[in-house]
Structures are given as structure tokens and as C-alpha cells.
Length: 321
Ligand SMILES: [Fe+2]
Ligand SMILES: [Fe+2]
Image 1 (cartoon, rainbow, N blue to C red):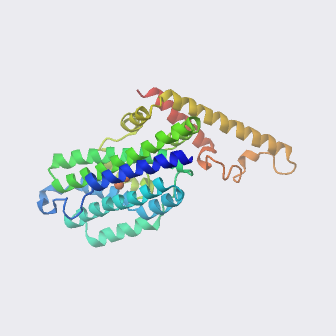
Image 2: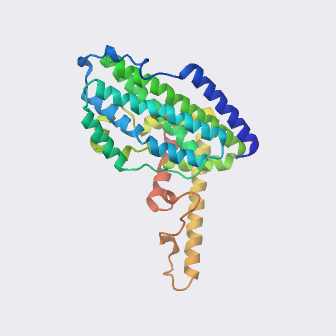
Image 3: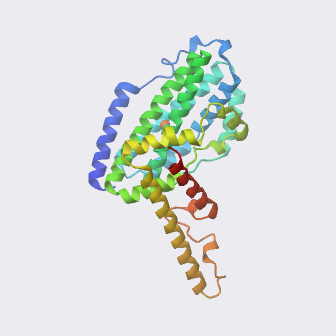
């Protein structure tokens, strides 16, 4: 980022951190009413959900190491990430304690789950700090929405412990989403065309983090569907409000998505022609798995499925509304 944007980012972080220190800090041991839990609140559906979200949050070593290194030369972003890691650490910790203290999971069961979690490794779905800020804005807001839905279910059951955990963790996620959105506002001011292009790219390839790394993912998804988070809800409650706050129209994203696809097709065509001109290399340069490696947009957009998935996602933006 340009020095002026870095300076604003620093001030943005200072405001975020001051507010976090003064108003949003919470204590796992004092702010969750552990003693008020009763066995009648036990629900296998809620336990599976808590275990799943705990698992997603348990990839913290990968999230923090990869994310922090990506932004290490930006004070505002790097210090945000360090603070972010502390706040996220309480989410998996409190969900884990909930499962253990309520006796819905034994220590050995949690230990085995943890072993399976750490067998796999999360890696960043996008390459640049700007793409990851876009991803962060979507992911944090989607997580807030999921925890908000869980808070509603916990209240229905009357479980004050789970309700407190989802309320406090959800409030953190909302603050994280807000920081990333403010970062994006700066990116848009600095380079609107490039940021719109990245936004179209990230929206088209967005997936929630680590869900597919979690053990017994398919069965968990069945249980969690009952919470009612689907792609439509994602568009209406996550994406569109973010676009609105940033002053970006859906049409701008659709146009940027089309420009991305056109550029991708032109790049493939140029590669193909280059391949035809080079003697003895088989001709079809575009099929070479090495081709495009290290390209700005990464491998996800270079295969046919990626391109059509991207098109479908952007078309969906046009239809939903
Ligand atoms: Fe979290
Ligand atoms: Fe978060």
C-alpha cells in the first residue's frame, strides 16, 4: 500500500484496538456463566455444531502463521492480525471447554478430534494481502452470521453457557469483519479497478475456511444445514450488505467478473498461440500444468471448472436481489 494508506491503516488499527481494549475484551473464566449449566440443556445437535466450529477455529496455528507473514511489512495489518489471533484463540478454547465441562465430550474424545484436526493443514485460499482482506471481510461476516444463528438456537434451548459463548465470539467476528471492510474501503480508494477485480475473483471462489478439513465433514454439514445458512443467505446477509457499506454496486462486481474472465481467456489464447509457435512441445501450452504457475490469480481460475464456477457465482449476484 502507498505510505498515505499505510498511515491511515495504522490509525484505523489504533481505533480498532482502543475500542477492543476498552469495550470488547471478555474473559473465558468470568464472563461465561459455567455454573448455570444444567444437564437438561444437552443437545447432540448443538454439541456437534460446537465441536465443528471449535474444529474450524482450531486451525489457528495455520491462520496466524500464514496470515501474519503475508502482511508482516504493514504495521496496521500485522498488529491487527496478532490481536486477531488472541481473540480467535478464545473462541476454540471456550467451545472446547463447553464440550468438556458439560460432559458432552470426554477429554480423550477431544484429544482424538484434535489429533485428526492437526493431521491436516490449512493453507491460504488466495495469494495477496488485498485478496485475503476481501476473503477476511466475507469470512468474518459469514462466521458472525453462523454464530448469531447458533445464539438463537442456544436461547431456544435455554442454555445460558452456549448463548454467552456465541454472543461473545460473534461480537468479536463482527468487529473483525468491520476492520477488513475498512481496509477494503482504503484499497478501493487507492485502486478501485484492481480492487473490484480482486473482489469479483474472491467472491467467485469463496469457501468457508477449513470446513472440508474437518473430520466427518459430510455428516456435520447435514446437522448444520438445520441452522439454515445457504448460498442465498450468504448473498443477502453477508455479501450484499458489505457491498452496500463499501459503496460498490452489484453491477460493478458483475462487470469486473466479466473482465477477469475475458483476461483469462485472452491469456489462455496467447499461451495456446505461443505453444503452437514453439517446435516440439506438443503445441497445447494451455494444458501444461506448469503454465500459469505463479500467475497473479493463482491456479483456481486457470482450470475450466474454476472459470465456470466463477461465472456461476457472478451470475448468481445478478439474479439474487
Ligand atoms: Fe472465531
Ligand atoms: Fe474472527
